[in-house]
Image (cartoon, rainbow, N blue to C red; front, side):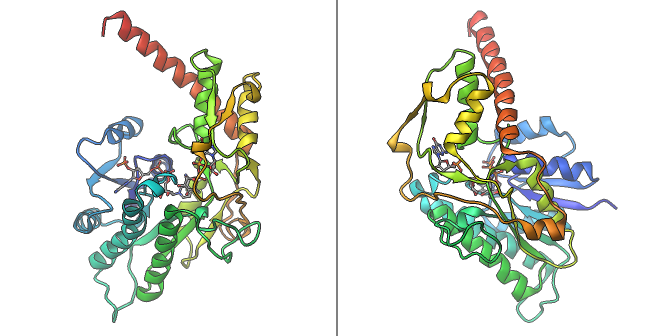
Length: 342
Ligand code: NAP
Ligand code: F7E
């Protein structure tokens, strides 16, 4: 019988790549979707027709118990979150509820459906993956960062993720659950949300190249990240649930680039000079910044056999090429609408 996976956050960047990977391995893939007529649900259904969906929200305990009970999954991947860091200063309570308490609610759903309690900690058949984040390292105490590096989160987002991380470990220790966290560094793709800096740059480069835009406003150009390709990172998530025992892993490329580097590479790809187009907007600088992140992913390489396949320049070029195609199509569609008088 094929394995069943339940993915929260299936309509997001990572959810879509993970669903593709699991389908290619013969899994029956279920996505938890929230809200009425979620437009991103129809988008991912068009991409992959053989997905199953179950309604639920990380804010709602009952819906998660019902979802786990209905799907009876072998593996649960908790990718659902409010993932844009600046939003966590605007709506800190909501972000803490979804990104922190939401993890507890999924663990509770697994515990309840598996019939586990404090005195009976024989474990669950259901394996659990939590999407932890390098944002937990925040103001780093050492570089590069590994599984033992101390957390010093710099945003409500990072603090909520740290709670999710520790509660996952606690359920592993309390109930014998196979529950692990992947501490993933930034990963991007043509499916990345338009608000994140790499995609903001690639989309602007496409618009500028095609003559629809002139300037691109960015915040802190000196911020340094360890950026990889999302398609590589979902392989690590899956591998983490296939091991003999549950262990947390850091996943990243070990390479550092600045926001300035990202802009330079993207503009150069279409023969433009970034300095002619990028302007700094102080309003985009964060109240407390994570200045630099770099992964020490040696444990993932040694134990999971995981290595990235796409380097940073290749990633930025892939995103620019995809956005040139997308912007061109969008503009053609808009022209068509004007032509028919819409
Ligand atoms: P994303 O594209 O922003 O997707 C977030 C997903 O969460 C969407 O499917 C969204 O669904 C869902 N969601 C939001 N609120 C929810 C709620 N209340 N209940 C259920 N689902 C909800 O994020 P991503 O880049 O794929 O990241 C996946 C996970 O990895 C996130 O937890 C993120 O924090 C974490 N992470 C990401 C990175 C990275 O660089 N990408 C690095 C480390 C960790 P809707 O369609 O309903 O909005
Ligand atoms: O910012 C700087 C900004 O928003 C990266 C999420 O997936 O990865 C992501 O979080 C850097 C920051 O990603 C702009 O200040 C400059 O230093 O692309 P980002 P993030 O905040 O690192 C982690 C691992 C996650 O877990 C998160 O879910 O770029 N920056 N100028 C800018 N950032 C944005 N968004 N926009 C700018 O104009």
